[in-house]
Length: 121
Image 1 (spheres, rainbow, N blue to C red):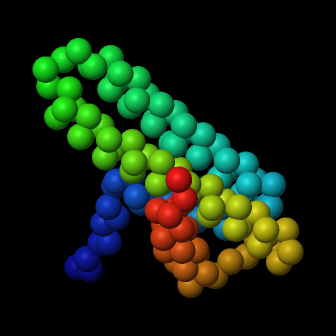
Image 2 (image 1 turned 90 degrees about the horizontal axis):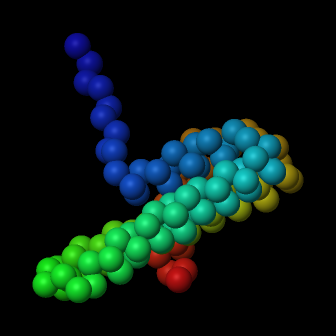
Image 3 (image 1 turned 180 degrees about the vertical axis):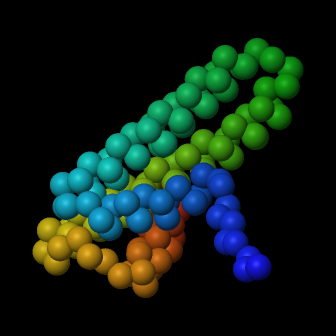
């Protein structure tokens, strides 16, 4: 029996999933996917966590909650930025070259989007 590859199921793996889908879409679909992923993850999830943190402001556990939610908010912003960059890259690429990216290109874009997403605030 062969081994099955088990993909990690975390928020960071969402970037690779967006890359896989955006590589197959037309240019306007890739741009729309990147924008929607940014809005849902960075703005939606990040805003929800900020609202939850603001609701706990009077609590005596506020420092602990702030440290925990602060990390999640940073992660949501990072993943949202990386998804937008991946969508933007494939929008430009698919506009000029068509939507037939190879596996090596998808992996490279995923890594590059994750690296650049960390530097954008």
